[in-house]
Every structure is written in C-alpha cells, then in structure tokens.
Image (cartoon, rainbow, N blue to C red; front, top):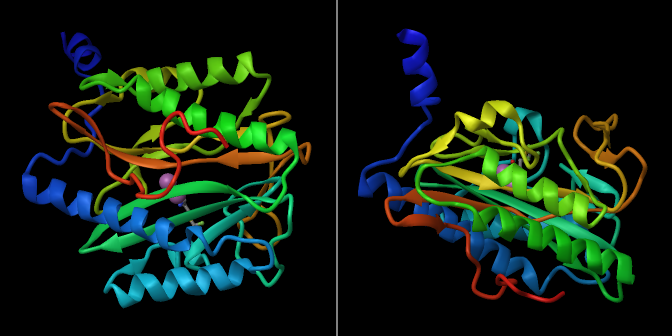
Length: 272
Ligand code: MF3
Ligand code: CO
Ligand code: CO
C-alpha cells in the first residue's frame, strides 16, 4: 500500500503557489533578462570577458540587486563566460574576444531574495559555418525542451526530446551538467537532465514548480573534462566546440511561463 502510494505521487518538489512568490520569481527572471539585453551589444570583437563581468556586476548593483555567482562556492566572478570548447563555468579573464569565437554568457542575479538565471551563446565577428550550426542547434534544443512543457508533464520528457534531437543531428548532449530547480536558492530540486534519466519520471512539473532548461550541446562527444586547475572551467573531452542557451521557467495552471525572455535576444524560430 505504502509502496503504491509513493509510486503514484512522484517526488515532492519546491512549489510556489502564491502570487507574491510568483511575482518575486518573475521580477528576478525579468531583471536577469534585462541584464543580458544590456550586455548584448557589448559582446563584441576586442572586449575582454573581465570587462563584461565588470559591466554586469556594476549594472546589477546599480539596480540594487546581487550577482549570484560572485562568491558562490568560492566562484571569483559575477558571470560565467564559456568560449568555444568550454562547456560551462568559464571564468572571465583579460583575453579579448576574437572574430570566430562563440561565447556563452551565463548571468544569475538575486532580486529581492529570488534567483534569476539565464544564458545565451553569442557569435563573435565572422564564425565558421560549423560554429553557427552548433549555436543554432543548441538554441533549437532549448526550445524543443520548452515545447513539451505542460502542467504535470514529467522532467524526463525534456531529456527525451533533446537527446533525440542530439542523435538526429550527430551532436553530443552533455550529461555531466543539468538544469535545476530555482527559487530562493540557486540550485534545488528537480535536477533537469537533458537526456532521459529514469528518476526524472517522478519529477512532475506541477503548477508552481520553477526550474531551468540549459542544454550544453557539443559538436563532438558528450563527455567533459575538468574542472581545470582553476577549480571551475569545464571543457569538452575531445576539445570540440560547445554551445548553450538557458531559460528559467515557472510552471503555472495555464502552462509554462518563461521568466527570462529578453527584449532583443533571439526568439523561437530565430536563424543565427
Ligand atoms: N549559472 C550557472 C547555472 O546555470 C551556474 C554557475 S555557478 C558559478 O546553473 F558559480 F559558476 F557561477
Ligand atoms: Co542554471
Ligand atoms: Co545559468
């Protein structure tokens, strides 16, 4: 009897039911998107990722908010900047971006105690057709994942469609890093793997659950290397290019609400 009940109910996930909580999450997602819009035209040939980091930190603090990454488990900067074969958690430095680079800028901010988290990959100058294709497919994979979301859908449905898309396009979908629940904490349940994992069948996206989808997509294999001796930087094992996009989503009674939509960023269907 008890076993059956556990099976039927699925896992208990953090859930935000009140309008006050949901408006807190909405404000955090909105500001984080605004920060990406602010950075957008600065992500150019010649700028250093340290300059982007400073701009992000100043913009966030000037608006009365907090860069969430700074000091998080000892992380030394306010944003992550992951260039070319860096999968995630690249640390800003003094090397200027150069034509042909692809760079993921991942911002997380704390607004009134609530976390906002989203990222985009930017094309710098003239990029190779392969790099452009990878960025396109990383973007499309995020939106495929978003496309399956309905009240009470299971987290595993996200990984199922993204993994299938990866196989169809001969891409490596990273398994070592996942999306995550988010709220008053940066990372919480559910884990959101971008490939199907049995335990994610029980993670039910009931109204009130808030989470990210953030597939890391490689031109080569799915395997990762690192973190490097800096404690953070994760690379593709085969040193192939990697790209990523991230949105934060609140499931509501009416369906998914994407909290981190930008004004000027790529919309579903965008061609890079
Ligand atoms: N923003 C990342 C995510 O999407 C986490 C970065 S943690 C840091 O979950 F410490 F590296 F900043
Ligand atoms: Co995230
Ligand atoms: Co992020």
